[in-house]
Length: 242
Image 1 (cartoon, rainbow, N blue to C red):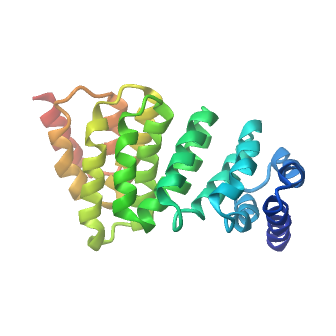
Image 2 (image 1 turned 180 degrees about the vertical axis):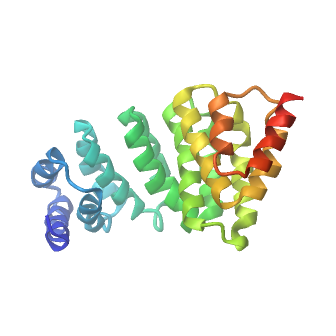
């Protein structure tokens, strides 16, 4: 499907959703979700739908989620992403619900990058406050998404010096999660630390020695050390062994 075809399909779907014809809108989308459609194409389809208010699109998103297709989570993520400038807290609530409903890593990562991750890029402080309760959520996938969101922010920051203070705030966000034990969540938190370490290695190498004396999964530390220098890794591991 060409880019313009995807946008046109998105407009047709949007018109149906706006008129309350949700089953008909999903009939147009379902064949695309049944195929191995590139994520960029799915995002182009979802972008026009995101222009609608959250209460208008909710029934459509719920219907997409019911089938639990991999591509469906991409569309949901893109639609929710478009709500961030208008309804940030409500969008976080819906993202939280969809992460739990999906119950799978690839949906969690898609939603984590596309919603709270994008929110950290565009609305840092309020997004940070909304993410804090997710660290202690009963659902491991929700906890995983905190690390995924941090990973996305770090990737977008690309180590710009002016963002160092925010990177430090994100390390503070992840600090209570260094002792996370559920491997579903550990992989996400470790991913966030890994990407922060890639772009802010001195910051992460100074932060890690304070954490390693605490109970933690070996994988958490390995991921956090991934992009640090040999000298930094030796120093941190040496302090861990003391």
